[in-house]
Length: 199
Length: 177
Image (cartoon, rainbow over all chains, first blue to last red; front, side, top):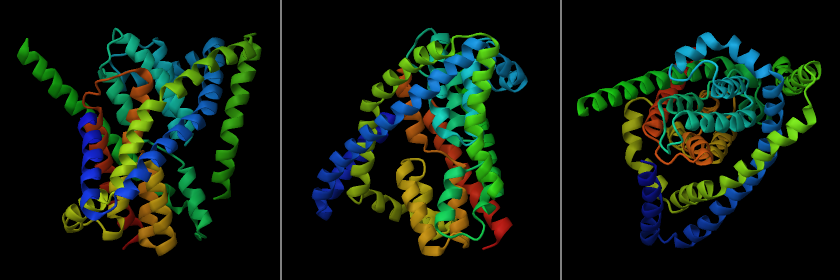
């Protein structure tokens, strides 16, 4: 599906430009898009190095295990396929907690680590396993308690009460997270049924 | 309000403090562990470059060519029909595709309508309540070398739609239109 979307965006973009005379903008967009992506990756280096370093300390000192134990009741329900003591669980839980606290840039490295551990758990296959899809569902819905960036922008535009949207944001994000989990479960059982029919 | 910004300023340093004190108590060589873990980070960030370049070039071509506007124009009547305010349609549409694009669009809406207007509040709620699905999937699966995403994209996009609907409903209930 990603392949289809990727090809769709590029081809329709170029074909549209043939008719409305925006070819110049398109040529520019190719290079500006590439440059933007590389800049983004370089920005990620500092964040990744720092957080993965800190996470490694927490893992070695056993802090992460304590943390995982605390959240075990929730984790086992969300990720029934991951053994409770598996290192993936520690990263998954730190990823979710970082998202909750609005620390988006700390959540990314932990999420990547979690996916890598889940890949090992899945025998190193290059296809997404069930817990990976659940974790992605949680991340794309981004359950947040404090939308820091939005509050900062509202402040910039002179809002009388920049934080008044915190309540509505929590409600909306809770809805999309619950929806994500339900849709994820639905797709999982659909796959499960299909596999059963074949075998 | 001030307490919220204080909390977000304090969270990170306090977290760091907890990790370091715990390491000191457990007598773990903290600095060595940090360096060892950090080495992965560089590799990871660099390995993301081809994935993000591919995706972001496609997105910027799609937007710059006007194809995005065409697509929006064709589905806009339908979205307005089911109750999405016309001004918010482009934001709802671009939010799952491009984080930077959505941020820019939300700022424009706040500038045009004012942050405390109905549209301003709705745009803020929408921006805060979901993440850029395409970016999240590209980064996470790209870095881990997952080629077949399965249902992940469908789940993410459907959840975004649910988030947009929830934002519109709750903002209408709380602030009125």
